[in-house]
Every structure is written in C-alpha cells, then in structure tokens.
Length: 175
Ligand SMILES: [Fe+2]
Ligand SMILES: [Fe+2]
Image (cartoon, rainbow, N blue to C red; front, side):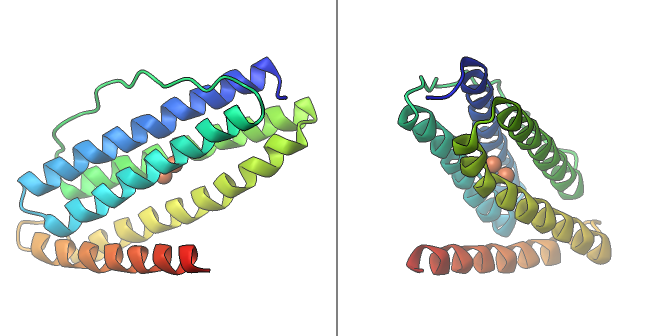
C-alpha cells in the first residue's frame, strides 16, 4: 500500500508520460508530412515507448493497491518550426520528465517508501539514456546543419539511429 500523496504523484506522472506519447505522435505526423520518414519512424517508436512508460506506472499503482487514473491529455502542438526546433522540444520535455521523476524519488524517500523507490530506479536509468540520446541527436543536427540541403542527411541519420534503438530493444527483450 502506498500513501495517498504518492498515489496522486504517480498519477500525475502517468499524465506526463501520456502527454509525451501524444506529443511524439504529433511530431511523427509532422515529420511524415515534411517527407522526413526516418524522423517519423523514430518519433513513432518514441511515442510507443512513452505509452509503455505510462502503462508501467499504471500497473504499478494497481499492484500496490492504489487507483490508477486514465489521464486527460492536453492537445499537443501540431506544427513545428524545424527539425532542429522539434528535437530541442523533445530534449526539453525529457528534461522536464527527469525532474519530475526526481521529485517522485524525493517523495518516496520522505515517505520511507522503499517499494516505490525500487520501482522508480528503472525510470532513473531510462531518463539518463533518453537525455543522452536526444543530446546526441541535437549534436549531430548541429554538425550536419539544418538548412534545406541537410534535411536529407538528418533524416538518413535518424533512420540509422532508429534502427539501432530497435535492435537494442530487441536484444533487451531477448535477454
Ligand atoms: Fe517516458
Ligand atoms: Fe522519454
């Protein structure tokens, strides 16, 4: 059994992960419209991942006898200034999620809630990886440049990164 405060905080995290899933879905759609199929595939996979992050918390709350709430999701933006700006927004959102996970950890420490502390460790690792991935992508976009002539190369690069992420996921689930 977790405290009511922790249950509420975890339900808020469900909204944040759910919003990330819809934001990335919206970004995938914009990339598709711009003819950036590598970027679209990457954002679709990220969107699926965020839904899994949401569900993981959802099931955890039920497991510890709380009440998991399906969130209301605000409509995400539908258009983006550029691929560079889009990935800056992704990175900013991931940083926001990391801060929120850290808040949850602080709350769990205060509650002496070792079960939730243990559960949250997965998210600590995940956020470190996600931030590093997005920072790496932004570095590459800076190197390639994001003028119209560079978009093709950025998209090819994203296709490669997406394939590597898929391969890593497959290896992880086979282990
Ligand atoms: Fe997430
Ligand atoms: Fe994420």
